[in-house]
Image 1: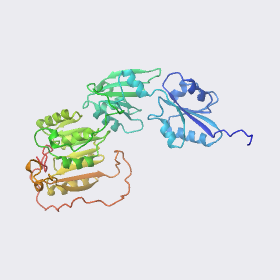
Image 2: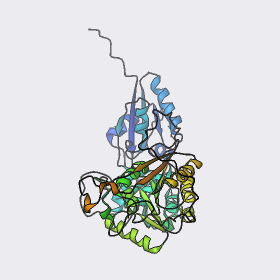
Image 3: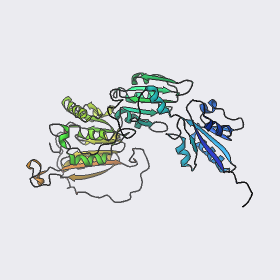
Image 4: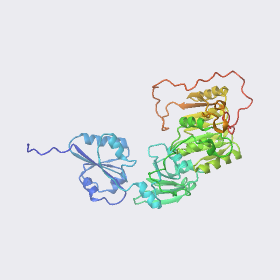
Length: 458
């Protein structure tokens, strides 16, 4: 055996979480011996950085990561310490370090979200936590529209005021704004969105966006975050009360597949009928606006929303004019209206539009409207009826009315709703059912408005 001492490791990297509390001995030791300390200006000012250590202010995260990479590559046993807020493994720097191949030792502090809910005196195992730091505020806003208890990690330009302006007045919520948690300027303020939109706020902050009526659930869950999504979808037509539904369960199943509703999305249900499509989207966690043109129809939607215990905003008016004041949707379902309504929806949709109609003569108009707004259009014909002899309630299996589902997808929109370059096609489109060529018949005198659910079983 050689008597030579073992070579020192090429470098060491420790990530310290800081929440304003005095550092524990376990965290002080690597900081006292550090050659390079990286962190925000307020962290570097608050902690006992050794005199001989070089410091890098983490204003530009990418540049700071480059400095860490360079120090690690020197291979001379440098001791690197990164200081971050709260728990650096939760929406923090640990992910970025791991993506660059580092294997840091992590010493977390109390997360800002845990501290915020503690200040509010609320449980948070059922809370939805979203980040607007370096991300679209729109998705955080949609999560707050749909869910009763959301913690938003903010950023400059995407803070309490901007969040409040996006939610007020359509979404009544209570804000608990937690500023500089654990720091010398800590302040916890409970306000309404109208007030939050006009007040100045200190960074950094966490905003709890609460529906006071549902902030504390009645039952205990078994999983952290929002409760699991629905165990099934395309609910039976009878689930939406007495009277006809515009979109039968079989057609609705395909519509939901093409809409792809999820947490962070906003879905328009235009010509909502009984609200069946919008309600099913809300069950998946999406924010939903249902549009109908008369008060009786709107009240029917509201009744079904209450029965299914979901959150759906209802907007009364005639499309396309009523759509102008609504926020941009990720996906739109059009259950009634002519090509001008389809085109208005397609011009605003970030990801997809689904149209259901009864007659093949309207399919071409819907396809043209979608393509006119740069969506890739598809169409299928669906005819579903009871398969057993005699059917349900004696219906003839061959007597079921056909419906045509037309949908358009925006190139470059990935499934999460973020904008991305369109990948090359990997396979040819599959034709589910051939559509007959529409006869060049004259257009009807008047297209049905968004309150008319045409082409489906009533």
